Amino acid sequence: MHIAQYNHLKKKLYIYYEQFFSRYTDLFINVSRGEQENCIKSGIFSPQKAEVIYNVIPETINEKTTISLRGELNLPLDKFIILSIVRFSYAKNIEATLAIAELLKFDDRFLFVLVGDGETREEIENEIKKKELNNVLLTGFKNNPLDYIAASNVYLSTSRWEGLPYSLIEASMMGLPSVATNVVGNNEVVKHDFNGKLFNPGDLQTAVNNINELCTDNNLFEFYSKNATTFYKDNFSVNKMIMQMQNIYSAFAH
Image 1 (tube, rainbow, N blue to C red):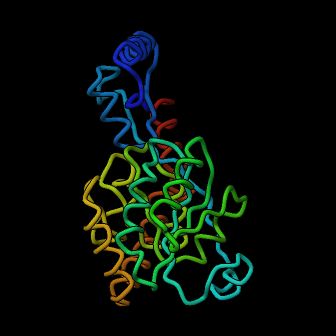
Image 2 (image 1 turned 45 degrees about the vertical axis):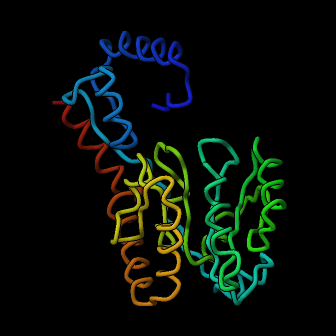
């Protein structure tokens, strides 16, 4: 339920619409616990009428090496790449990503790669020029995002809010540790000190520290990477979703 961007009247109308039609629904399936909690808090349905089944992504294994992928994608071999696959919009808060890049712009180990496009693209380009961020690369929209994930070191999300972010799930699937804002959606895919790091919105220095730590501590990086893959298989695999759906339909059949 994404109503954070709505004005007060639209929020009220949306919630009233959902409340009215919920009386004709036996069970609500939510794609995230954050979505479920928001709906319960808004009085749309009771906890007894709701289940959470995560959106899933079919497992993909990239057989190419990081070196070959970076060559194909024209990415430098000697950089620690922080990746964001993102729609250029207010919700994604790319300004915070650029602020983090600015704090690291004199450290030549790092390169921030932003894959995507959107309505704030021109503003972002102007901000990069204004701050002279030579450590930020905008690739535009790409139809091979998994190649960029496999070629990178860390996934970064600075979103103001999320539903259930596919890009973070894909990063987890590919064994990429993540650094992400501690907001609804992000914190269901990134478990702090398990498969990545969470930081509070606005606390950009902590995000910088997290990136530095993952760059310098190889044991920690490998620990998060292994856990990321495990967490994906345990929560976001197709088999997991099928099993949950079968259990729900079996319960209603009886």
